[in-house]
Length: 67
Image 1 (cartoon, rainbow, N blue to C red):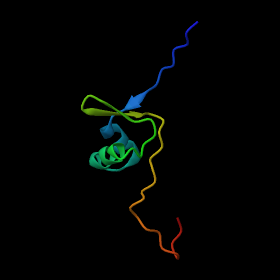
Image 2: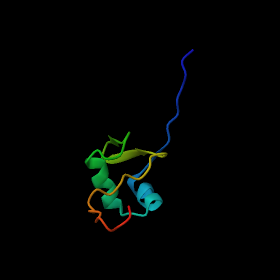
Image 3: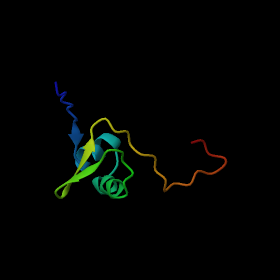
């Protein structure tokens, strides 16, 4: 028997609210393929609902700072 797996997805605006970042930043992360399992559905991004926010690689951590 075929098993059906149901995946839940969120939009960039939903991810932005969940991760407390801008919608534009989420779109950039999608375009850079930094979010695992993301794909484009027409003009919109589909982000797996259980995906964790990617680390922000733009910020350089100094030696005296804690990560």
